[in-house]
Image (cartoon, rainbow, N blue to C red; front, side, top):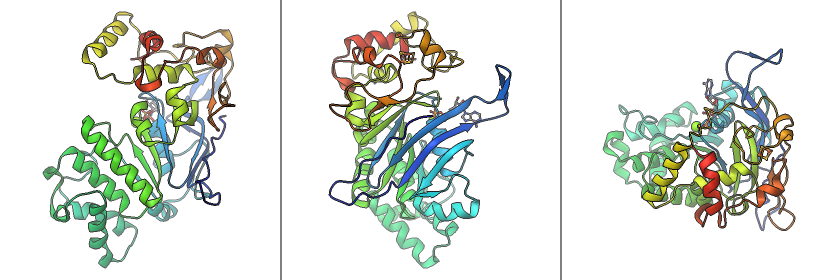
Amino acid sequence: MSTAVPAPAPSGTAAAGPALEVRDLTVRYGRPVRFGGTAKTSPAVDGVSFDIAPGETLGLVGESGSGKSTIGKAILGLQPASAGQVLLHGSDITRASLRQRRVTAIDLRVVFQDPYSSLNPAQTIGKTLTEPLRVLRVPKDQHRPRAAEALAAVGLPADAIDRYPAQFSGGQRQRIAIARALVCDPQVIVLDEPVSSLDVSTQAQVLNLLADLRDARGLALLFIAHDLGVVRFLAQRAVVLYRGQVMESGPIEEVTQRPGHPYTIALTAAAPVPQPAEQARRRAAREALGIGTAGATPTAAGGCPFATRCPLVTDVCRTERVPLTPAVDSATSGAGWVVACHHAGQAAGMRPAAGVSGNRSLSDFLSLFLWR
Ligand SMILES: Nc1ncnc2c1ncn2[C@@H]1O[C@H](COP(=O)(O)OP(=O)(O)O)[C@@H](O)[C@H]1O
Ligand code: SF4
Ligand SMILES: [Mg+2]
């Protein structure tokens, strides 16, 4: 079970409740398998807790397969939770019926990764944008004005409303997907890798747009990404996930600049570097060592899920699951900064010199062992 990571109260206002809360969420897929004589499934998400305040962005980060999208789906009611709760403005929506979901869908919207497959090529943008309004039974005379308003909010021209997805670039399509989320005037948006398929300059434009919309509308954003550098751009806090469990969580500056968990250190080391030759050198060295991907590495049966890849592993790591506890430096900074590591003190000594974007000589070494 993980420790809840509380959202800070917005400054200058009375403490408002979180817009979204996830409490001890566990999600299991598929049929039960046998582990040690007891029938149970291996969870894709295992006791994850966090919350997001209005106007705040929480970054959910981890490698492919770590459970990020599953958390998003459970929040949206697209995948049943096996245990735990999802609360929207304090109301439990974990097991909401389709009818109840229709109401919460006004407040809770989603933007998916792929701007090509998420838009119906046979529908005009206007039809795509007004579809949620029709489902939510918004009076018809409001449909077109609200679609036009949403397009303007994402910086697209008014005539986009009568055009088709094929007439737009990837970045413009992702703006359309954001407009489709905005058209209901939501308070919470789940963004599942919304810029991962875009080129770097388009990524920056879309991230800037999201930051502006969040600030102007007080949106609570759950920003899912595999790249800590991208998360750092938008999020105030981050939750680092590995094999469905929270490894580290806290203010974005702490998690990216002074990571306290070996896995977060590996992620910071593995953030893309701008020099192609350096990137190629790292990849070649990793491949020469024959280090498997996260998915190919067997999981420890108990204990820390990172034990099979961690250079600091000891016997206790293999047998005892680690609770989230305050990071070693959390007394001096970073309220709500927690780490799940038996040897967090040692891990802190292995940090890269300057986090995500700085000199990473020691973490270069680590990345040989840890990155795909
Ligand atoms: N529909 C599904 N059925 C069975 N297993 C799934 C399904 N979707 C995802 N998984 C598994 O759950 C784990 C987490 O997946 P996912 O949430 O998609 O991770 P991420 O978004 O971090 O890449 C992975 O091991 C994945 O194989
Ligand atoms: S608990 Fe042990 S195996 Fe897990 S990250 Fe910490 S040192 Fe590594
Ligand atoms: Mg995913």
